[in-house]
Image 1 (cartoon, rainbow, N blue to C red):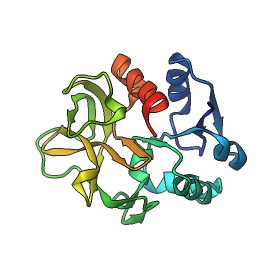
Image 2 (image 1 turned 135 degrees about the vertical axis):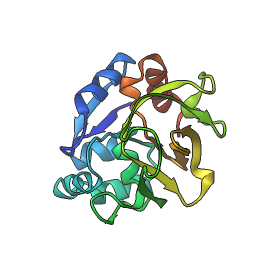
Image 3 (image 1 turned 30 degrees about the vertical axis):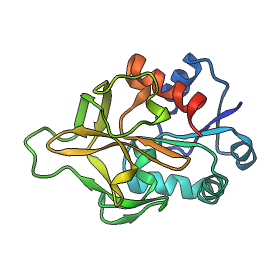
Image 4 (image 1 turned 90 degrees about the vertical axis):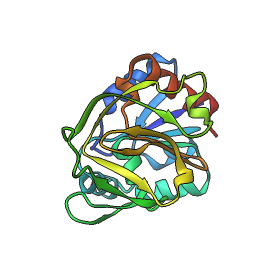
Length: 203
C-alpha cells in the first residue's frame, strides 16, 4: 500500500517522511493529484500559520483533491497544522476559513499561566477507543509545539484531550479523518506506534 505525504510547501516533510520510513512503509512525498488519489493512506503534515498553510494548499491546487479524498473516505491523518486545517475556521492572523471537514474552530491559548506556545512533552488522556492508539497506555507522553488549539463543535470528535491551562483536543477522529495536534515524528516510540497504527489499523 502506498502512503502519500502531501507536499504543499508548509510542512516538516523530511522528519515525517523519515519517521514513516522507520516504521517500514513505502512513502511518496507528492502534490500530484493522480498519485494522491491512488494512495491507500494520506498524511497532511504542517507547521506554521493557518492562513499560510491554506494558501499553500490553494497554490498547489490541492483543495479539490483533498475534497475528493474525503468524499472517497480515504483515511487521512492531519498532523499539527494539518489537523487544524480540517476545521471550519481559525482565529489566527484574523478569521480565516478552513477546509470545513470538521465543524469547529481553531483558537489561541489565552488567559493561562503557562508559556505560549505550548512546547514540549505532555500527556494524552484518551476519551474513547481508537485504532490510532492501539497498544498505547492512557496518559502516554507526546511532543507538542503550538500556540493555537482545535475546538470541535461536537465533543464526540475528541479521541484524546491534553491539559495545558485547561483541556484541549489533542487528537480527533471523524469517520476516515484523523488528526493529532502533537508531532508523532518527534514523539519517539509512542509517535512511531501512532504512525504505524494509522497505516495498519485505521480505516
